[in-house]
Amino acid sequence: MAQTIRSRIEAATKKLKKHGQDHLMRFADQLDPEQKMMLLDDIEKLDLELIDSLIAEYVLDEPEHTLPKEIGPAPVYTVPAPAALAPKYQQACEHGERLIAEHKVAVFTVAGGMGTRLDFDGPKGNFPATPVRNKVLFRVFAESIIATQRRYNCVVPWYIMTSAANHKETVDIFKRNNYFGLPSENVMHFPQGMMPCFDRTGKMLLAEPYSLASSPDGHGGSLRALYINGALQDMAARGIEYISYFQVDNPLVQVVDPLFIGLHALDSAEMSSKAVVKCDPLEKVGNFTLADGHMTVIEYSDLPDELARKRDENGRLMIEWGSIAIHIINRSFVERLNKRGFSLPWHRAIKKVPYIDESGNLIEPEKPNAIKLETFVFDALPLADHSIILEIDRADQFAPIKNASGVDSLQSSHKLQIERAARWLEAAGVDVPRKPNGDIDAQIEISPLFALDADELARKRAQLRPLKPGDIVYLG
Ligand code: UTP
Image 1 (cartoon, rainbow, N blue to C red):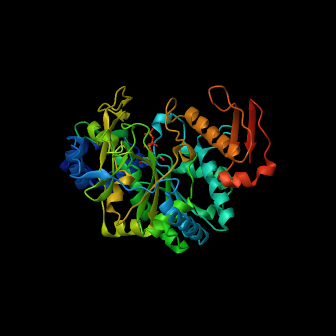
Image 2 (image 1 turned 180 degrees about the vertical axis):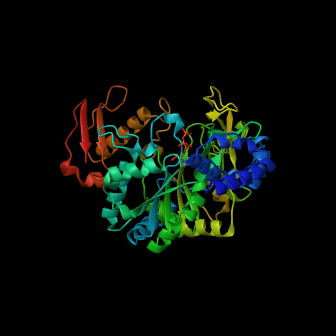
Image 3 (image 1 turned 60 degrees about the vertical axis):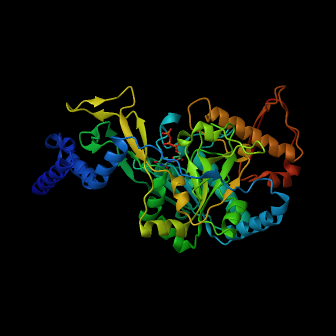
């Protein structure tokens, strides 16, 4: 055994030396056998040829973003349906409902991010998100899935991508909460890939003397993680054809949307997206464009201001659609990508990453010191044979919780959640008290189990009471 470890250490050191990374073995002799194994496991997994090329391209150099030659507006199915398309929307809705009822749709939540901006201890899906009952995000999605299954008398399996940093804790949270009311066999967790973190000279960092500093490889890593962890195989065995993809941070997401699935399927698309009209030409969201003929998201940081502000002859922004990271992805598309081999472009981020210095001290940097590399799922859009976009009303489906305060925080999300609940109640004919400035003068939460949408709430009109100022109301 000792001999095996010794020879593995020698082999790893030799390999690392060739790539200028042998500092990673600096403490190897001082480690106990278990720690030595941990370090070797980390190092033997590295594809050092690939890492060399990534360092050259993305770490030592900051690749310049080259804009596509032709950038034009992306075609979008707007809401409400334009008169000429009303029959198509109707047909799409019915088709989508049929696909859900025929068990062809799965839900997929990407929950492998580090959630650093939120500053919450634990997986973000366990963050208390709702305004009255403080339900955690995972519970909100689970209730939506249960309500969808009841409505369509079907099974909607739920796939959740975690990362090495939060996998065990996420699975424990599900176990402790009885899978939030879902049968455990219909919930699958799997971890995404990790990428080493680099200092600015391209050296990999150690998080401990016996482990590398690494971070999740971005939500784009989901497309490979679905394949290598057997999730796609599981989907195939269940007859799933469409994957309803969304992020863990949006409590207003419609986990399965018949209209979206139906339009996607009727148009034979492979990967499609929901979009909102940007609130500002320079809003910090990805921009949908038709770039050299392909559906492409251009990051706000890569879109020149002049282009972002450009308007057509009717005064509309040429690039007016922002991405909210909600997609329908065909299982067959992800399979094809993986079987043929694919790569998504890498994006670099400079972040604060604690590391072990050459003397073995843990350094907690005060300023960003390290480069992390990630891929983004929307970069798969140009690889799809066809792609559609459906507009959504931002106020109805988008209330992300990303930051500890300010924009996209719990506070802003609560406000949006309460406002949506109030609109649904008012549409059902219930009086909702408002303050002179228009704000809702009540705390309201509607569980997806009570109503998945405004129409369902309206059908329950007989159970609804008028609200008084300051009321705290939970409909569950
Ligand atoms: P964000 O871009 O908000 O990143 O992820 P984050 O890591 O969660 O948060 P910050 O930037 O550290 O504050 C958007 C969505 O993509 C998922 C996140 O869990 C979230 O649902 N994601 C992100 C992954 O699943 N893996 C990743 O590597 C990155």
